[in-house]
Amino acid sequence: MSEPDTAEPMSATATDVPTTSDAVDAPLLEVDGLRKEFGGVTAVDGASFRVAPGSLTGLIGPNGAGKSTTFNCITGIHEPTGGTVRFDGQDVTGLAPYTLAKRGLVRTFQIARELSEMTVLENVMLAPPGQRGESATRAVLPGLREQVQEAEREVVDAAWETLDFFEIDHLAHENAGSLSGGQRKLLEMARVLSTDPEMVLLDEPLAGVNPTLEEKLLDRVDELRRDGLTFLLVEHDMDVIMRHCEHIIVMHQGQVLAEGDASTIQSDERVLEAYLGGDV
Ligand code: ADP
Ligand code: MG
Image 1 (cartoon, rainbow, N blue to C red):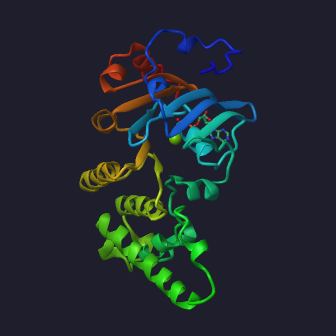
Image 2: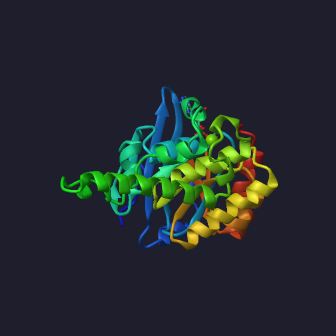
Image 3: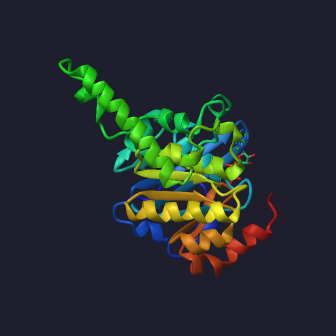
């Protein structure tokens, strides 16, 4: 494979530390030389990494390292200033969130104000459609009405199933706005999962979540992985990252500083320095 363009000196990555994700033969997600500038601020500065299918990969780094911006560039919220994003072997750089969702690549969103006035069940039913190509081909005229009714039933059934899976089915008829912070996080997860995704990006899904719900959420992630889903997780809680992620990518100042498994990361002095460096 060709090297990413290295026009600028990249002192932080100039060592021979094994970059494990280079060894992923068929990555589901491949980010190459990603850049994002906001006016004079370079939020992401040539980040490259790969995510193996079926993995739970952690993306960590001090505040301001560029993690959220990276997520936003991958999922079409921001258009990258440079670099490429490949998903499932295809160049998806700059595609709109809706298009990416149809292909199976989604991120969680905070429940918007309008949606907080709808019920939990409605929220899950309203999530963007899945990509599995059911509806369009089925809408042939004869028997259309029955088919529409059947499709609606399926949406409702699927929504209940998702709520049940996250154990928030007892809240189905509550307004989303009345949920606790932790329950809301479960609903955010339920919403993206109802789109039948292949890969889910989670940006601090445990913020404000109590330990019981946290366990529940992490259990669900593990269960979904067994079903073949792929996760990329940004999380502050190092303990969670080290215990649950088999591969960890460390960002610092918009670049990938190090990556590897938990023990590799924990013994990497540059990682320690980045966290202690106080670039916050
Ligand atoms: P992290 O999620 O790792 O804390 P971010 O991606 O949020 O980091 O931010 C990286 C850098 O980009 C920070 O310096 C931040 O202030 C800046 N930044 C992020 N979003 C914007 C924006 N919309 N406009 C201007 N600067 C931004
Ligand atoms: Mg962030």
